[in-house]
Image (tube, rainbow, N blue to C red; front, side, top):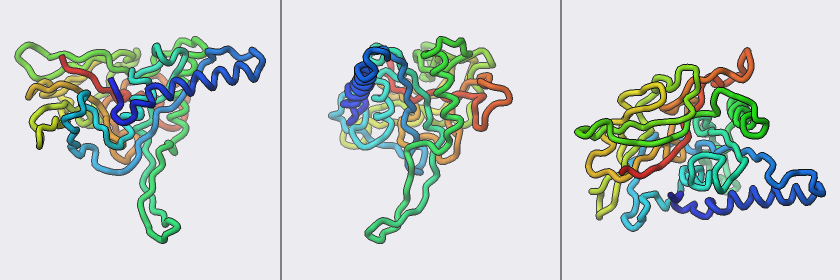
Length: 275
């Protein structure tokens, strides 16, 4: 599944990793492996808009993803449209999710004398993000047994034959209690027909329950919905840190833990078809 206008990243990001690996291999006269471990941080939140602004996707966009500006598609394409790493296009790659560590807006005055809002897409909260990347790197690069590198989307299905509610099942829920009580009920949306001029519209579907390794969202299959997505915004969780909906509990890498929120890991954004 594509990332909207950022489809090219599905190819260019894995190609960049492959190119850097080859250059390191050549420059070290073969001392560096051609497939050495590579880690990256998914792009952080940017902007301070509302969590949901009800965007309308053009009806001629067959995959239902917005072709307009937005960092959600870019984050998705950083994983070569898989939503996770490593994958077939990105072997021996690991990542950290950072979209819940936003930079607060600040004022700046440009060379034209106009004052505007500024934002930084690179998280200013380095310790929690570094701890997440370290956890993934220990597991992928050093084969160290860690509790989990974080939750990932696995599947979605109707709760039962008569319900429009959806059970979103996860993997990587760890052994410390699994999914934490949701901090807010927002984050999931279903793509439904019936918008203006024949467009499909993403509508919020609230989290109504959670279990050890799943969350239930209300009404996701209603109105002939075709897709489900999570945190598909440039700034999906507001301007406060650690404000997304779905986290799993984990034991910190070190004791006492570093500053930040190392005792919980967030679910990365994803988009999927509804069967």
